[in-house]
Image (cartoon, rainbow over all chains, first blue to last red; front, side, top):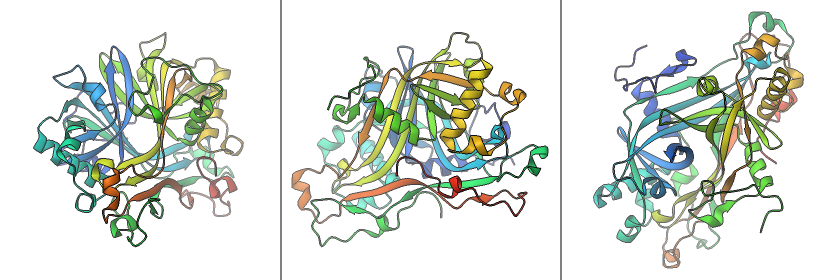
Length: 222
Length: 222
């Protein structure tokens, strides 16, 4: 099926291996990004690749990225830096009759483009709201808002969702027909990032109840 | 504490932000790698960074990496390719009184070095065993072993654990003292990649029981 609003692709972003698992569907890309908590951000410094996990949030076709090395990345670059950002959700182990067909079910997104520093204070405050609501919906209303000096002390990058792809594997193993008669169990072991019961801070006043949004916390569409 | 057998570091691998969270302890690095199912592998092609999720396994101080783009990465390179590989385990959300101190608990490893193609057939078969046992302990004994043509059809990379670092955040939020009196809940929401009940393949003979290693599947030390 051709998506109605695909994102553009090019040689660098085209899914070359297992192309039937590739997709340029914007809605799917958004959905995967919205479920992920971490991006792996790749950039090059003096010819050396770096891959750093960073928190992020999505606002339409723009990602805001937030992480310890963000300022180091952009230290000497006024014009932005070429990056590749990847989000990966593990959905399960694929147990085949043959080791050759062992696999994993997953949904991933790989995007290419330039990251730029968010300098405007109003946009930065907006980005911090997007970031916190991405991690914990409801957090912006619950917590103390950032003070101007906290906004200034935070490095936020902006990154456009404008080139890249999603890749998805679902379902059963793809064993060779001849192997399907072997007396070997095959199927899937589902995997899910699961929240546990919230643990109060050691210094928390004992009469504060755990907020509903944390008790019912989950990633993705239920 | 200084680890007894640290891995070497250098300017590119030194933890610069939040250095107290950094570690060069080989045992910790091994433990994080052993719990992770996916590496995010970063490499540079024509100046462009790529970050691709790949399955892997560890054999002492060597990683074997296995993924769709492995052969594309090494296509034109006989001598190996400079890569950065990153493994990230998400352990929880850190809910602070102030948005500025919202965070995540995590354990990550970032390694630098050269990936090379495994060409020797005996080492490749060994690597395939390491890879399958990393994903599902017990799988090598249970499944049909790779045929010579399957071994040849698989691209495996070797990568030495010889330079890099781990980074770990644990525990409560670090709110400013003045904020700790606010009537706002704070603490942690634990996160864990959790296996569900195994789902038999649609074509599976109905009398095959689910193997014990899948019923009791888990990542990391219990």
